[in-house]
Amino acid sequence: MSDNDQTNWGTATRGVRVGAAPTPEGEHSYPIYATSSFVFESAAQAAARFGGEEPGNIYSRFTNPTVRAFGERLAAMEGGECCVATASGMSAILSTCLALLNQGDHIVAAHTLFGSTISLFNNHLSRFGVTTSYVSPTDTDAWGRAITPATRMLFVETPSNPLTEIVDLAALAEIARANDCLLVVDNCFCTPALQRPFEFGADIVIHSATKFIDGQGRCLGGAVIGDAETVGEKVFGILRTGGATMSPFNAWVFLKALETLEIRMRAHSAAAQTLAEWLEAQPAVERVYYPGLPSHPQHELARRQQPGGFGGLLSFDVKGGRDAAWKAIDATRMLSITANLGDTRTTIVHPATTTHSRISAEERARAGIGDGLVRISAGLENVEDIIADLEPGLSGK
Ligand SMILES: *Cc1c(COP(=O)(O)O)cnc(C)c1O
Image (cartoon, rainbow, N blue to C red; front, top):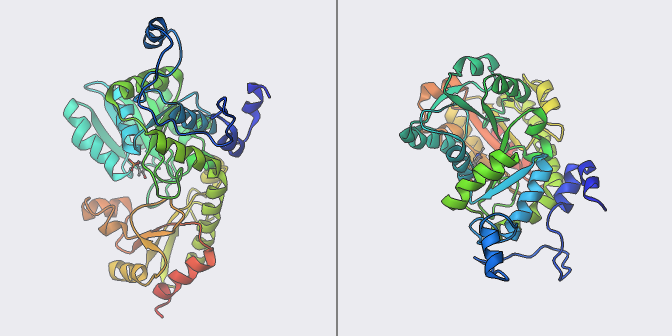
Protein backbone atom coordinates (compact mmCIF):
# COMPACT_ATOMS: atom_id res chain seq x y z
CA MET A 1 0.00 0.00 0.00
CA SER A 2 1.48 3.38 -0.92
CA ASP A 3 1.80 6.21 1.60
CA ASN A 4 -0.69 8.21 -0.43
CA ASP A 5 -3.52 5.91 0.59
CA GLN A 6 -3.06 6.96 4.21
CA THR A 7 -4.26 10.48 3.44
CA ASN A 8 -7.71 8.99 2.81
CA TRP A 9 -7.78 7.09 6.09
CA GLY A 10 -10.18 8.07 8.85
CA THR A 11 -9.01 9.04 12.33
CA ALA A 12 -9.56 5.59 13.83
CA THR A 13 -7.57 3.89 11.05
CA ARG A 14 -4.74 6.40 11.45
CA GLY A 15 -4.76 5.73 15.21
CA VAL A 16 -4.37 2.01 14.60
CA ARG A 17 -2.13 1.93 11.53
CA VAL A 18 0.06 5.04 11.10
CA GLY A 19 3.65 5.02 12.41
CA ALA A 20 5.33 2.07 14.09
CA ALA A 21 6.26 0.11 10.96
CA PRO A 22 7.61 -3.31 11.96
CA THR A 23 11.36 -3.66 12.54
CA PRO A 24 13.23 -6.55 10.84
CA GLU A 25 11.98 -8.77 13.72
CA GLY A 26 8.46 -8.55 12.27
CA GLU A 27 6.72 -7.80 15.57
CA HIS A 28 3.01 -6.88 15.40
CA SER A 29 3.10 -4.57 18.45
CA TYR A 30 5.81 -1.90 18.27
CA PRO A 31 8.73 -2.32 20.74
CA ILE A 32 9.90 0.01 23.50
CA TYR A 33 13.36 1.31 22.61
CA ALA A 34 14.71 1.55 26.14
CA THR A 35 18.06 3.08 25.24
CA SER A 36 19.55 6.44 26.06
CA SER A 37 21.87 6.57 23.03
CA PHE A 38 22.57 5.04 19.63
CA VAL A 39 25.80 3.88 17.95
CA PHE A 40 27.14 4.87 14.53
CA GLU A 41 28.83 2.76 11.85
CA SER A 42 31.69 5.21 11.47
CA ALA A 43 33.02 8.57 12.58
CA ALA A 44 31.74 9.97 9.27
CA GLN A 45 28.23 8.72 9.96
CA ALA A 46 28.31 10.21 13.48
CA ALA A 47 29.35 13.54 11.98
CA ALA A 48 26.58 13.38 9.36
CA ARG A 49 23.94 12.61 12.01
CA PHE A 50 25.10 15.42 14.27
CA GLY A 51 25.28 17.80 11.33
CA GLY A 52 21.75 16.95 10.32
CA GLU A 53 22.81 15.77 6.83
CA GLU A 54 21.69 12.23 7.58
CA PRO A 55 18.46 11.42 9.41
CA GLY A 56 18.64 8.89 12.23
CA ASN A 57 18.93 8.38 15.93
CA ILE A 58 21.53 10.08 18.12
CA TYR A 59 20.39 10.33 21.74
CA SER A 60 16.99 9.76 23.32
CA ARG A 61 16.66 13.29 24.65
CA PHE A 62 15.70 14.18 21.10
CA THR A 63 15.48 11.03 18.94
CA ASN A 64 13.90 7.78 20.06
CA PRO A 65 12.01 5.42 17.71
CA THR A 66 9.14 4.67 20.15
CA VAL A 67 8.63 8.35 20.88
CA ARG A 68 8.81 9.15 17.16
CA ALA A 69 6.21 6.46 16.35
CA PHE A 70 3.80 8.02 18.86
CA GLY A 71 4.38 11.49 17.40
CA GLU A 72 3.85 10.37 13.80
CA ARG A 73 0.62 8.64 14.73
CA LEU A 74 -0.80 11.57 16.71
CA ALA A 75 0.22 14.09 14.00
CA ALA A 76 -1.58 11.95 11.39
CA MET A 77 -4.71 11.83 13.56
CA GLU A 78 -4.71 15.62 14.01
CA GLY A 79 -3.92 16.20 10.33
CA GLY A 80 -0.71 18.08 11.26
CA GLU A 81 2.72 17.92 9.68
CA CYS A 82 4.99 17.36 12.71
CA CYS A 83 4.65 16.32 16.33
CA VAL A 84 7.06 16.83 19.19
CA ALA A 85 6.28 14.60 22.19
CA THR A 86 6.97 15.95 25.67
CA ALA A 87 7.19 14.75 29.28
CA SER A 88 3.81 16.24 30.25
CA GLY A 89 1.08 18.51 28.96
CA MET A 90 2.59 21.43 30.86
CA SER A 91 6.03 20.87 29.29
CA ALA A 92 4.32 20.90 25.87
CA ILE A 93 2.91 24.36 26.67
CA LEU A 94 6.19 25.55 28.21
CA SER A 95 8.24 24.34 25.22
CA THR A 96 5.85 26.02 22.78
CA CYS A 97 6.12 29.35 24.62
CA LEU A 98 9.91 29.17 25.02
CA ALA A 99 10.33 28.32 21.34
CA LEU A 100 7.97 30.87 19.84
CA LEU A 101 7.87 33.90 22.18
CA ASN A 102 10.45 36.59 22.90
CA GLN A 103 10.86 39.16 25.64
CA GLY A 104 8.14 41.81 25.30
CA ASP A 105 5.68 39.55 23.49
CA HIS A 106 2.04 39.33 24.52
CA ILE A 107 -0.44 36.43 24.73
CA VAL A 108 -4.23 36.69 24.58
CA ALA A 109 -5.78 33.73 26.38
CA ALA A 110 -9.18 32.46 27.46
CA HIS A 111 -9.79 33.17 31.18
CA THR A 112 -11.07 29.60 31.60
CA LEU A 113 -7.73 27.85 30.91
CA PHE A 114 -6.30 24.97 32.94
CA GLY A 115 -4.98 26.40 36.24
CA SER A 116 -1.31 25.51 35.70
CA THR A 117 -1.38 27.15 32.26
CA ILE A 118 -2.59 30.41 33.84
CA SER A 119 0.07 30.04 36.54
CA LEU A 120 2.77 29.47 33.89
CA PHE A 121 1.70 32.62 32.03
CA ASN A 122 1.20 34.85 35.11
CA ASN A 123 3.96 33.73 37.48
CA HIS A 124 6.73 32.44 35.22
CA LEU A 125 6.59 33.77 31.65
CA SER A 126 5.94 37.21 33.15
CA ARG A 127 9.45 37.13 34.69
CA PHE A 128 10.85 36.99 31.16
CA GLY A 129 8.81 39.96 29.96
CA VAL A 130 5.97 38.00 28.34
CA THR A 131 2.56 39.36 29.36
CA THR A 132 -0.90 37.82 29.07
CA SER A 133 -4.40 39.29 28.77
CA TYR A 134 -7.47 37.16 29.47
CA VAL A 135 -10.82 37.31 27.71
CA SER A 136 -14.08 35.39 27.70
CA PRO A 137 -13.66 32.35 25.43
CA THR A 138 -17.00 32.92 23.70
CA ASP A 139 -16.75 36.69 23.16
CA THR A 140 -15.05 36.70 19.76
CA ASP A 141 -14.93 40.51 19.57
CA ALA A 142 -13.13 40.67 22.93
CA TRP A 143 -10.27 38.63 21.45
CA GLY A 144 -9.82 41.18 18.69
CA ARG A 145 -9.95 44.10 21.15
CA ALA A 146 -7.33 42.51 23.46
CA ILE A 147 -4.74 42.24 20.69
CA THR A 148 -1.87 44.75 20.80
CA PRO A 149 1.06 45.26 18.40
CA ALA A 150 3.06 42.94 20.74
CA THR A 151 0.57 40.05 20.57
CA ARG A 152 2.08 36.90 19.09
CA MET A 153 -0.18 34.13 20.36
CA LEU A 154 -3.86 33.39 21.00
CA PHE A 155 -4.26 30.47 23.42
CA VAL A 156 -7.52 28.52 23.96
CA GLU A 157 -9.10 25.31 25.16
CA THR A 158 -12.47 24.25 23.77
CA PRO A 159 -14.81 23.15 25.28
CA SER A 160 -13.86 25.15 28.36
CA ASN A 161 -13.57 23.51 31.77
CA PRO A 162 -15.86 23.21 33.71
CA LEU A 163 -18.69 25.04 31.89
CA THR A 164 -18.13 23.50 28.42
CA GLU A 165 -18.24 26.85 26.61
CA ILE A 166 -17.35 26.43 22.94
CA VAL A 167 -14.76 28.69 21.31
CA ASP A 168 -15.42 29.49 17.65
CA LEU A 169 -12.06 28.31 16.28
CA ALA A 170 -12.64 29.45 12.69
CA ALA A 171 -13.47 32.99 13.89
CA LEU A 172 -10.38 33.08 16.14
CA ALA A 173 -8.19 31.75 13.34
CA GLU A 174 -9.33 34.66 11.18
CA ILE A 175 -8.46 37.16 13.93
CA ALA A 176 -5.08 35.47 14.44
CA ARG A 177 -4.27 35.62 10.73
CA ALA A 178 -5.33 39.27 10.39
CA ASN A 179 -3.04 40.21 13.30
CA ASP A 180 -0.08 38.00 12.42
CA CYS A 181 -0.52 35.85 15.56
CA LEU A 182 -0.43 32.11 16.10
CA LEU A 183 -3.63 30.36 17.18
CA VAL A 184 -2.67 27.68 19.72
CA VAL A 185 -5.38 25.19 20.74
CA ASP A 186 -5.07 22.89 23.75
CA ASN A 187 -7.13 19.98 22.36
CA CYS A 188 -6.89 17.88 25.52
CA PHE A 189 -10.64 17.54 26.19
CA CYS A 190 -11.65 16.50 22.67
CA THR A 191 -8.60 14.74 21.20
CA PRO A 192 -8.47 14.37 17.38
CA ALA A 193 -11.16 11.70 17.64
CA LEU A 194 -13.73 14.46 18.25
CA GLN A 195 -12.21 17.74 17.05
CA ARG A 196 -9.35 18.56 14.68
CA PRO A 197 -8.49 22.25 15.17
CA PHE A 198 -6.25 22.44 12.04
CA GLU A 199 -9.41 22.02 9.94
CA PHE A 200 -10.61 25.34 11.42
CA GLY A 201 -7.34 27.20 10.90
CA ALA A 202 -5.38 26.57 14.13
CA ASP A 203 -1.59 26.89 13.81
CA ILE A 204 -0.57 24.69 16.73
CA VAL A 205 -2.37 21.92 18.60
CA ILE A 206 -1.24 20.99 22.11
CA HIS A 207 -2.09 17.92 24.15
CA SER A 208 -1.85 16.64 27.64
CA ALA A 209 -1.63 12.95 26.72
CA THR A 210 -2.14 12.28 30.43
CA LYS A 211 -5.90 12.69 30.07
CA PHE A 212 -8.05 11.12 27.35
CA ILE A 213 -5.14 10.00 25.10
CA ASP A 214 -3.93 7.57 27.76
CA GLY A 215 -7.46 7.49 29.11
CA GLN A 216 -6.51 5.00 31.80
CA GLY A 217 -4.68 7.18 34.31
CA ARG A 218 -1.24 5.56 33.89
CA CYS A 219 1.33 7.97 32.44
CA LEU A 220 2.17 11.65 32.10
CA GLY A 221 2.88 13.00 28.64
CA GLY A 222 2.23 15.80 26.19
CA ALA A 223 2.56 16.78 22.56
CA VAL A 224 2.91 19.82 20.28
CA ILE A 225 1.71 19.48 16.68
CA GLY A 226 2.19 21.93 13.84
CA ASP A 227 4.17 22.64 10.67
CA ALA A 228 7.75 21.59 10.01
CA GLU A 229 9.24 25.03 10.65
CA THR A 230 7.28 26.09 13.75
CA VAL A 231 7.15 22.74 15.51
CA GLY A 232 9.62 20.50 13.63
CA GLU A 233 12.44 23.04 14.00
CA LYS A 234 11.63 25.64 16.65
CA VAL A 235 9.75 23.60 19.28
CA PHE A 236 11.94 20.55 18.58
CA GLY A 237 15.00 22.79 19.03
CA ILE A 238 13.99 23.89 22.53
CA LEU A 239 13.15 20.31 23.51
CA ARG A 240 16.44 18.99 22.14
CA THR A 241 18.29 21.47 24.34
CA GLY A 242 15.88 21.85 27.26
CA GLY A 243 15.19 18.14 27.64
CA ALA A 244 11.49 17.97 28.64
CA THR A 245 11.33 14.77 26.60
CA MET A 246 8.75 11.98 26.67
CA SER A 247 10.10 8.67 27.98
CA PRO A 248 10.05 5.68 25.56
CA PHE A 249 7.94 3.67 28.01
CA ASN A 250 5.28 6.38 28.22
CA ALA A 251 5.37 6.77 24.42
CA TRP A 252 4.69 3.05 24.08
CA VAL A 253 1.69 3.26 26.46
CA PHE A 254 0.29 6.24 24.52
CA LEU A 255 0.98 4.60 21.13
CA LYS A 256 -1.19 1.65 22.13
CA ALA A 257 -3.78 3.97 23.70
CA LEU A 258 -4.20 5.83 20.37
CA GLU A 259 -5.41 2.54 18.85
CA THR A 260 -8.54 2.65 21.01
CA LEU A 261 -8.91 6.44 21.22
CA GLU A 262 -11.81 6.83 18.81
CA ILE A 263 -13.97 4.06 20.30
CA ARG A 264 -13.20 5.29 23.81
CA MET A 265 -14.09 8.90 22.96
CA ARG A 266 -17.32 7.74 21.35
CA ALA A 267 -18.19 5.81 24.52
CA HIS A 268 -17.24 8.75 26.82
CA SER A 269 -19.44 11.04 24.69
CA ALA A 270 -22.39 8.62 24.70
CA ALA A 271 -22.22 8.23 28.48
CA ALA A 272 -21.94 12.00 29.01
CA GLN A 273 -24.93 12.60 26.71
CA THR A 274 -27.10 10.11 28.62
CA LEU A 275 -26.01 11.58 31.96
CA ALA A 276 -26.64 15.16 30.79
CA GLU A 277 -30.15 14.30 29.61
CA TRP A 278 -30.90 12.45 32.85
CA LEU A 279 -29.54 15.31 34.98
CA GLU A 280 -31.60 17.86 33.05
CA ALA A 281 -34.74 15.98 34.13
CA GLN A 282 -33.86 15.96 37.87
CA PRO A 283 -35.80 18.48 40.01
CA ALA A 284 -32.74 18.98 42.27
CA VAL A 285 -30.68 20.17 39.27
CA GLU A 286 -30.96 23.78 38.21
CA ARG A 287 -28.94 23.71 35.00
CA VAL A 288 -26.79 21.29 33.00
CA TYR A 289 -23.78 22.35 30.92
CA TYR A 290 -23.08 19.93 28.06
CA PRO A 291 -22.55 20.82 24.37
CA GLY A 292 -24.62 17.83 23.28
CA LEU A 293 -27.81 19.25 24.81
CA PRO A 294 -30.04 21.36 22.54
CA SER A 295 -30.31 23.75 25.56
CA HIS A 296 -26.53 24.50 25.32
CA PRO A 297 -26.17 28.02 23.86
CA GLN A 298 -23.55 26.85 21.33
CA HIS A 299 -24.99 23.45 20.52
CA GLU A 300 -24.96 24.17 16.77
CA LEU A 301 -21.35 25.43 16.80
CA ALA A 302 -20.30 22.34 18.78
CA ARG A 303 -22.02 20.14 16.22
CA ARG A 304 -19.97 21.69 13.38
CA GLN A 305 -16.68 21.96 15.24
CA GLN A 306 -16.71 18.59 17.02
CA PRO A 307 -17.86 16.21 14.30
CA GLY A 308 -16.73 13.19 16.32
CA GLY A 309 -18.88 13.91 19.37
CA PHE A 310 -19.50 16.25 22.29
CA GLY A 311 -16.95 14.76 24.71
CA GLY A 312 -16.87 13.26 28.17
CA LEU A 313 -16.95 16.42 30.30
CA LEU A 314 -20.15 17.89 31.74
CA SER A 315 -21.18 19.94 34.73
CA PHE A 316 -24.39 20.92 36.48
CA ASP A 317 -25.72 23.36 39.08
CA VAL A 318 -27.39 21.74 42.06
CA LYS A 319 -30.10 23.78 43.81
CA GLY A 320 -28.93 24.75 47.30
CA GLY A 321 -25.35 25.89 46.69
CA ARG A 322 -22.26 24.38 48.23
CA ASP A 323 -23.97 22.20 50.84
CA ALA A 324 -26.22 20.56 48.27
CA ALA A 325 -23.30 20.08 45.84
CA TRP A 326 -21.11 18.48 48.52
CA LYS A 327 -24.02 16.28 49.58
CA ALA A 328 -24.55 15.10 45.99
CA ILE A 329 -20.83 14.28 45.69
CA ASP A 330 -20.55 12.59 49.08
CA ALA A 331 -23.61 10.42 48.45
CA THR A 332 -21.85 8.62 45.59
CA ARG A 333 -20.25 5.27 46.39
CA MET A 334 -18.70 4.24 43.05
CA LEU A 335 -17.60 7.51 41.40
CA SER A 336 -14.06 8.75 42.11
CA ILE A 337 -13.93 12.11 43.92
CA THR A 338 -10.92 13.62 42.17
CA ALA A 339 -9.99 16.63 40.09
CA ASN A 340 -8.53 14.35 37.41
CA LEU A 341 -10.45 13.72 34.20
CA GLY A 342 -10.30 11.62 31.07
CA ASP A 343 -10.18 8.23 32.79
CA THR A 344 -12.07 4.96 32.34
CA ARG A 345 -13.48 5.70 35.82
CA THR A 346 -16.08 8.43 36.16
CA THR A 347 -14.77 11.31 38.26
CA ILE A 348 -16.74 13.93 40.18
CA VAL A 349 -15.51 17.19 41.72
CA HIS A 350 -16.71 20.50 43.22
CA PRO A 351 -14.80 23.14 41.18
CA ALA A 352 -15.47 26.13 43.49
CA THR A 353 -13.60 24.51 46.41
CA THR A 354 -10.94 22.54 44.47
CA THR A 355 -9.81 23.28 40.89
CA HIS A 356 -11.05 26.89 41.03
CA SER A 357 -10.57 27.61 44.75
CA ARG A 358 -7.52 29.82 44.24
CA ILE A 359 -9.37 32.43 42.23
CA SER A 360 -11.51 34.94 44.12
CA ALA A 361 -15.25 34.49 44.66
CA GLU A 362 -15.92 37.49 42.38
CA GLU A 363 -13.79 36.05 39.58
CA ARG A 364 -15.57 32.73 39.96
CA ALA A 365 -18.93 34.45 39.81
CA ARG A 366 -17.88 36.36 36.69
CA ALA A 367 -16.77 33.09 35.08
CA GLY A 368 -20.14 31.52 36.00
CA ILE A 369 -18.67 28.94 38.38
CA GLY A 370 -21.26 28.90 41.17
CA ASP A 371 -21.09 27.23 44.58
CA GLY A 372 -23.63 24.63 43.45
CA LEU A 373 -21.60 23.56 40.41
CA VAL A 374 -20.49 19.91 40.12
CA ARG A 375 -18.23 18.62 37.32
CA ILE A 376 -18.22 15.09 35.99
CA SER A 377 -15.85 13.37 33.58
CA ALA A 378 -17.92 10.45 32.28
CA GLY A 379 -16.03 7.17 32.32
CA LEU A 380 -16.58 3.83 30.67
CA GLU A 381 -18.69 2.08 33.33
CA ASN A 382 -22.25 1.11 32.33
CA VAL A 383 -24.08 4.43 32.33
CA GLU A 384 -27.00 2.91 34.30
CA ASP A 385 -24.56 2.30 37.16
CA ILE A 386 -23.28 5.89 37.05
CA ILE A 387 -26.87 7.16 37.22
CA ALA A 388 -27.70 4.76 40.06
CA ASP A 389 -24.71 6.11 41.97
CA LEU A 390 -25.71 9.77 41.46
CA GLU A 391 -29.42 9.29 42.09
CA PRO A 392 -29.52 9.08 45.93
CA GLY A 393 -27.61 12.36 46.37
CA LEU A 394 -29.94 14.21 44.02
CA SER A 395 -33.27 12.72 45.03
CA GLY A 396 -32.81 13.43 48.73
CA LYS A 397 -33.37 9.74 49.49
C1 LIG B 1 -4.11 18.36 32.60
C2 LIG B 1 -4.12 19.44 31.60
C3 LIG B 1 -2.94 20.03 31.17
C4 LIG B 1 -1.58 19.68 31.76
O1 LIG B 1 -1.22 18.39 31.47
P1 LIG B 1 -0.18 17.54 32.38
O2 LIG B 1 0.02 16.31 31.55
O3 LIG B 1 -0.86 17.31 33.69
O4 LIG B 1 1.04 18.36 32.51
C5 LIG B 1 -3.00 21.01 30.19
N1 LIG B 1 -4.18 21.38 29.66
C6 LIG B 1 -5.35 20.83 30.05
C7 LIG B 1 -6.61 21.29 29.42
C8 LIG B 1 -5.37 19.85 31.03
O5 LIG B 1 -6.54 19.32 31.43
